[in-house]
Image 1 (cartoon, rainbow, N blue to C red):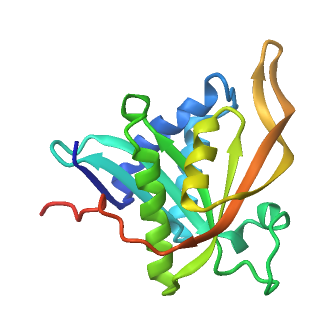
Image 2: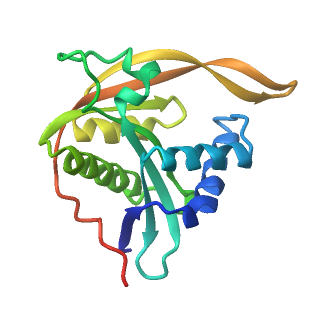
Length: 196
């Protein structure tokens, strides 16, 4: 199946909101509402975060999305990552990655991640840079994919997440793995410009 990976537009907003709902289901059980999720993506778009959308080439069916921001915009994550220069400005944080369930196990997450890395490298015209991702224990496959890209270092942190429980919403501790490593610029054969 041929894939188009392209920049997000506000016309994609409802697709992102719908896809993001999966985090309200097991095993994540996060408390989410569509309005807050839409506002989060609008805010990321306004702050020029790099949001990429994947869709099928044949019928332009939405498959998933990825969000990347400079690590310097996330001090809560950056504090756990060593920086030889003391700056996190030219380091990429892979903030969100969602692939619709029916498109899983087709390497779509890897394609979106590679496209995100390539765009960051092009934006800053750098060949090698640090990439950081925060993972949940609910997705062990992501760690394997990030290792394949060269993100071999990790640190475990505990965060508080608003979760749905039998007694209603509650802030609960949630273990997260922050995976990082130096990644080289690479061409992405999966990224195609959208047809006219």
